[in-house]
Length: 320
Image (cartoon, rainbow, N blue to C red; front, side):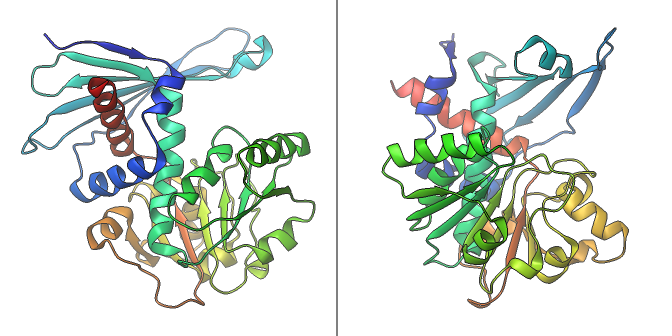
């Protein structure tokens, strides 16, 4: 009988150091896994918005030596805002893929946050200029606060600028970065910060473009993390039509407003996307054609990345 582990947020995070997670994701995207469609279930509420239950399963390919099955369960309860508690709770359950035995229950929010920024860092390893040192983070929330550490695992980042609609959130993030010995500053003028950045990473819930093509200097890498519905936007049409486009998975073409809207308007086509992260990971070499080109990576998240992270957490727990 397998030993069953329960890991809280801090224990889950401790087993997901970014260098190891990024490399595990490279291997995972290259190999792939079995990814059925995620399930969305609406839970009716009286006197408040309906809640949602998401079930996101994934399991290893049948020819792999070690077999795993993972399911992420996510509850989204907008009404929690009035209760003063988080509106999203996520749990990840990992099973032995051969026997169906439970192996570990771990914090799903931590899995999601760390694999999200690690996925972007993996893409930046192939798409940003090797000497990129100036990082601009737009959005200082839970995910945004993880971006600098992930990027420092793949690029010589020595200066981080932070912009958020809430200046207090930016200040807190900058203070935390400074306490870790990272040179950081709050951005007052977003346009100037964009013009000076080597890498721009956005982690917002914006429905209007924040990054403008006119602000981007040659050689910039743009990483769009936040938008995950067709109505959400973080970059303007000019950026999307001009940049060399890459995505984490083909689902981004149908889920992300940064791509869905320009495709619907005829500005770009699905063929405008140069490659997926699987393509980049299989090639495992720089993908830029020049130091002057602007690259753009759009991710919407993947059950594959969740499973890769969960396996890493479990193996670390098992080793202990």
